[in-house]
Image (cartoon, rainbow, N blue to C red; front, top):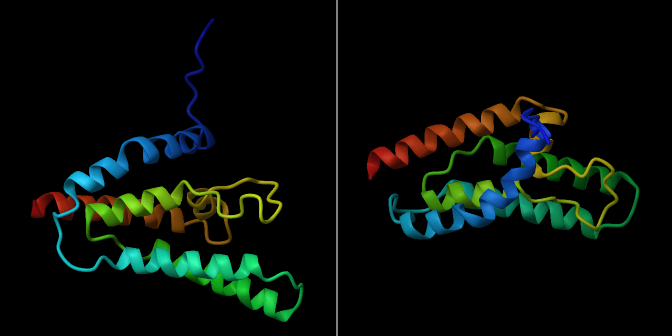
Length: 145
């Protein structure tokens, strides 16, 4: 039987949760002290999670629902424009990227994880920006070590 060697974006992203769950948290624990101080990505992750939870908790279909959706996507955009400054922050970001934000709460026919939303959503360049920021952050963190 011949192995499938085609690597689609979907297949690549499907492997991200396993990598995030298996490797990144232990790296964050072992190397978390490289950069001292508050990591702005942790605040951005918190703001996104709060906006998401608020929107999912609201069950109306009116102007307020539209406003809550705008708040969620604004927080998501801020998240993708914020650069982590610590290994722990970078690990938390990668873990969030693998999250299926709507899970069981909202029927999501696409079943997209957060990073997929950045590449396929209304502002598809956010994914490129996010990966570029993460690469730059990891280089800075490594240089400071």
